[in-house]
Image 1 (cartoon, helix red, strand yellow):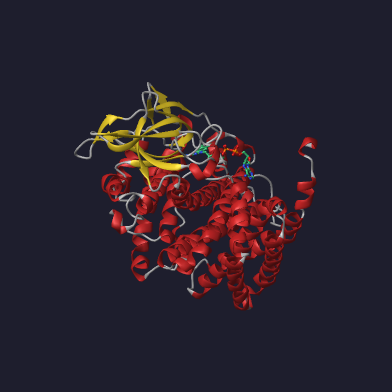
Image 2 (spheres, helix red, strand yellow):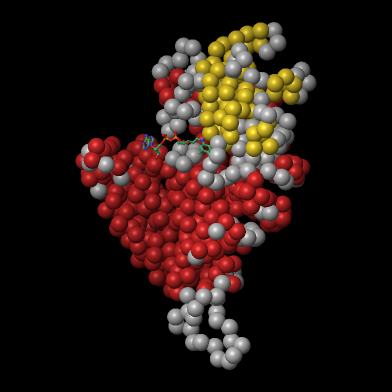
Length: 577
Ligand SMILES: Cc1cc2nc3c(=O)[nH]c(=O)nc-3n(C[C@H](O)[C@H](O)[C@H](O)COP(=O)(O)OP(=O)(O)OC[C@H]3O[C@@H](n4cnc5c(N)ncnc54)[C@H](O)[C@@H]3O)c2cc1C
């Protein structure tokens, strides 16, 4: 149940797809190695403790599991939190492509812990993009260093996917002490790390409505609401009017406190507006986009950990003579472990190939975001990839964690092996930050619709061009990728012209097809790059790319049938369900 960061794999993806500057490439090894040490030695041992103990609410105070707070202190002291924040905020400006492996390591090691910095990261990006100079001066530095953490307060009981339904209110106020501010009242549910004992302040980013707000999503504003109001020296002082009512009991990530927060039971929590009135959702989207990439990385992270757990078990568990292996002679001859059974090998290879594809896709999207920071014209590519990374990688995390249990047989269902925790933890990534159904709707309804598929086709042209490289040892990858690409092009043409309800009904299989084809393309590039660099694992890379081509890209026609089968879905009367 230990964790070893897959540094060689990470480095290959970065070198092939990360598009790192010379400066970033130079520090990459040192950063990755030091992060691996922290993840393996400090965070990974916390994972089962967090699962068993969970965070608790006692006398209104949230206590995280033993060791969590100290690990967070070490993380801040090590400067890890500041690494990927922009230099103008006091961060070190690490590119997203290089931040992605760090997020992967923290989440492979202990997702229940890693959620706290993950949300803070989004809060930093949002405040940096939309905060006033004064807000940035007072809060940003502490969030970047990690001395304080940021949260994301969107969800209410009646407003989950549909944020237009939210009711939390913000009334304008003005006094000598706090200047122009707002009094926030309402209840938020499911707030990750909405309260905890890691830091001496928590800065909530809260969506609420002004009194004159237009209806629904056109009338939502964003507010900065600290747990402790700052005194004249900028230090946490008086407690704000925010109460933690409950922590949710949940399937996984037990260590991560999922809070029901009540704002303003005693006259109104004090907050300050971020950005323009009624434009809060736009600002919040900066945070959500950042988080969506990272949630996709969480899926990848759990997949990697589940693979390592399953492989270690399969190398030790002995159960029957594998088909096709001659029985060893002699009284002392041992039966080989289950890793030699063809079906167990198939399961492990499928876990490994899909994890490699998810890693390639996630880091590639990180590089696309970096490119968009340098050149706004590259933004459409990044926008296209974000919902795919979020949904495809988080779905893979669940599937791979489930296969991991299967590799263990009955022991996978027993908590001692840790395989069950991986599945329980992975499950949430397909739900929060916009469910995967919402991501697919975003891909088809917004990202394809807004340019009639042009950004997608530019990516497809790149894939088509790469087919010419698939010769010699790589030739078996060529036809499955060419067929998958042709299917994706057909599906894209169909969806761009489809009526919106039909397009919506085909959106999830389309996202699956999209992720699978891009995954196959990127794996082919990795295999070629490994061979060119003379990597010792070049043959293994080709084998996993080939497995992916033959076993995953082979599903492309099935996805297309489901995409075009939207009429059956739309035509079905919900009363008949
Ligand atoms: C552990 C945990 C942590 C969380 N952390 C946070 C947090 O830190 N901050 C925060 O604000 N929220 C947080 N959330 C809330 C999370 O983002 C929401 O649960 C999620 O967005 C879905 O909303 P919902 O639960 O209301 O489901 P619903 O919106 O009710 O969705 C139910 C089903 O209907 C589908 N559906 C709904 N609308 C559509 C549509 N338009 N098109 C297609 N399908 C649709 C959904 O895909 C889903 O399958 C967290 C939730 C959990 C469980």
